[in-house]
Length: 363
Image 1 (tube, helix red, strand yellow):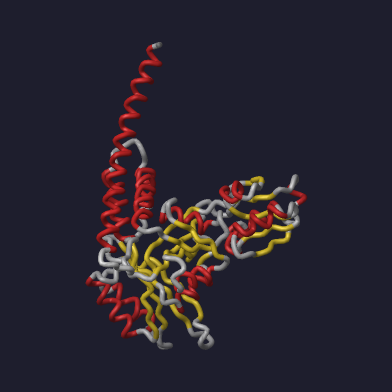
Image 2: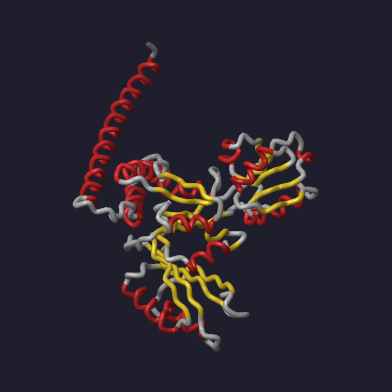
């Protein structure tokens, strides 16, 4: 045996021993998770809540804070996300509805938030995501809220106004679109299909590179990939994962007009989330049509040094030129200053709806 072979053998033996320790510790963690499930379900409790986003956020933040390894903080946190996902599945399988089919960006956001041991449930529309969670057919739903270049997803906003569900988590996903097709030459592509948001995010690229192609909006980018799989004259805007799933050729990668293209998703469910120590609160208000009304609302937060991270307006559909505002602020609804601010906003607004407090995503 050469010196190099001997050195490699020694290191591999060390790795094998470390792997055994890791496996034993993961087994111990899984046993603790099972004990948690036993405690929560004792006495036949059928309404126990197993997924605690605030607890998961705290654990992942702690993982990143104590990380001194060669692995980047986010990579270490991703490993723990998968361990936590597997342990949660032992306690109670979690079903998460999303805008499908498989391979959509919504699907990717489910995996990022819940890990690979969750049970994704593909549905055909954003409205259906809300519906199946409201009916109890899924534990949670994942819906797109806003894109950094194309703005808000109006369907999601409309559903948030009417739903009894609350927001319990937030996921930000970097979006990199690919042009997928089985066409042998770009000239053979007659039509480009994708979700309306994706078409908008790649509008300039499509004008510059496929000016002859018709564009068609469909319910999801994964659906577009399925359509392109069946018709060589079509090209889809979708992810690299979709290319693998639907056996499509990647004609061009990263064709989004903005390099930092990002979509924000929200987790919707039936339970309110407890404080995690680093949270956001989302609400909807409409105001009286009088001078200074919006300023009065915003002063409720500004006077208490509460940072606002987002404000979006849209028509209420009740009457012409009547608007409602979607507002996100830093802090949890149970924090003393936020609680008082929300109380004052509710008293001043013509309409007020709290749609949830949730952890700032650690990933």
